[in-house]
Length: 277
Image (cartoon, rainbow, N blue to C red; front, side, top):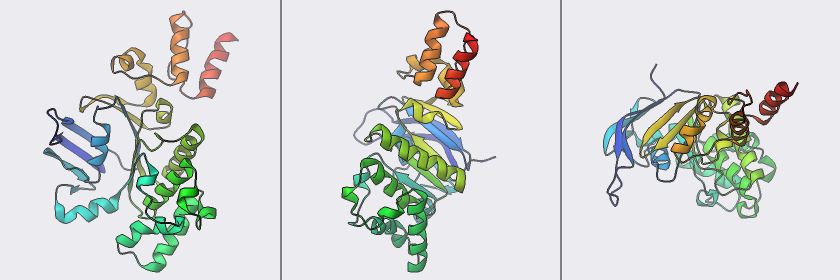
């Protein structure tokens, strides 16, 4: 079955760079899925994300979103309606002095009727747990709260897909947990397709699929349990593994028969407890 997002032999080269940022990339993302993307700096993660709502279009090849070619300028609004983007710095996405006005900004620009905007804004703020802050000034919020407002602004567009490009990079651990739990709940309740780009290994644990980018190509593609179990391969790619996997790996090196696919803390603890019984 064709994916809701499809990359077909996509190449991309920034005008100022000598090498390509994407090199013949093929990728299909299933509707309703949660795909996490990891990779070192310069691996092509953000370039990949920006192709998903036509911020960038391929130098060669094509990207289809819901069957629409992103290079077709006459269909640009169709693509942007389908794909909402959240970036790492929420301050760059906040445009108004009141939270609810900021969330209303995107649907207003899409020409949504005022009554429908009111409904969408209230619903979006409730979905991210920020309704009580709707009349507050965004600059007085914490980093995690600002990012949740940015996500609410995307939700109010009612996209089929939400792409988050390192959305927790500037947040403390509490803010990271708030944002990740918000997105997981949205995916569960609304069936939204999620693409989550990160450099935090533990944020990938709940994904259906994990992609590892390296030098503009997909180096590894599988479930988080499959990918993280390949500890030596992750090291080759300049990446770490979740702390749980790292602990289990070290214990295996000492001769203990433990699985490497117990990614969550509880599962890791249970695997060790079973061995000790």
